[in-house]
Figure 1 (tube, helix red, strand yellow):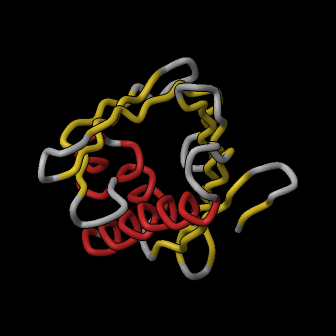
Figure 2 (spheres, rainbow, N blue to C red):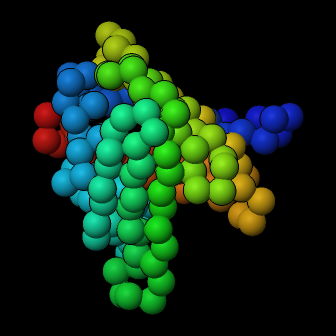
Length: 142
């Protein structure tokens, strides 16, 4: 969902897995490297995650053919274990992720401030694709 009024985008998924497993797979670098890509021709060859307020994460995202790569990193502002993650991406954009148990599984709602280079639709598609990869990976392993 795109909110043009405040320039934010929200993506969601319900993951059919226990909350503890969802949290672990979302936050542990070994797992992040398995699901953090928007398409099959990309991957995350390395990830670090210092999951604490003031801690940082660093993900190297790269095209599998070696043609392009970039660092995706940020600093944590707020963490409520198995419930909430708030961070700022390098450059200052804010991301809020909520984890909520439902009868169907864990609902993950991710809201982020859009950047100005790519279209809002493209950003929404990319973040939703990554979230969908997380869902698929986690459900297959749970």
